[in-house]
Length: 313
Image (cartoon, rainbow, N blue to C red):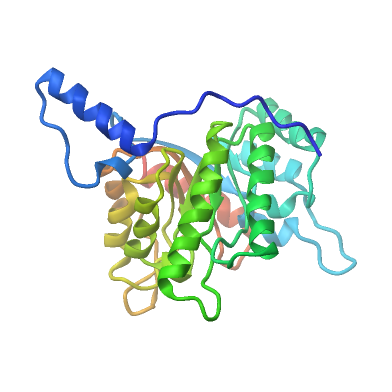
């Protein structure tokens, strides 16, 4: 186990941020924004996109099978990203040791720096829908450990899941459990300046309405959305749902296939995504997460170039 990093001073809550913004607007003679501005990422001055690649895209190379070792490790993945002239790398936790040491994480961080790459974030598996008990406490402890790891790795953001309801739990109880788990985790992440990005990933978060219901009930400026373009499964037209959540996004993961309202796969409409993110003044990483078959390195290079072209500002 490694020692915890020195915490930063806590910041204002979302509601305190909103109150301060309204007061400042009144002094300046400006009308304050209304509705749900407390949950919207504040202060963005025009769009800016940086490009990254999720290690999950290379999962067929980063995972071994049986006695066959992986064809590549994360150092090799970082080198691949450098060859693509990306701005950053998303170092998915799945391809690290179960309990990575500080030395391991610092090695990854240093290799990224030498290759001129930022760590755009990391991603973990977790389930805040578990009811009270040992299993739930293990989930909460797992997230806290990865907040510690992210601080050592210099990853500014962790992609998290809400989880799934348990048999016998009402939707209301499931919602409360998820909100409580996210809230506790955000309070811990705030000490280290780490953002938690809740992904639209199955269950109640598979629609923009379900996702935002959770986001709005958590009171922390350290929570945002990981907008995954391929994961809206119900709730309406997927691009309209992307519009709903884009202004809350602190990270964007791009799939090259999007399912329409009838569940039919369609090629990603990059120009439409550009408009959605531009209208939301999104400033941050746009991360390719490739999940289709084929020659993964070649396909990733191809789609990185397409992102550069179609999302150019």
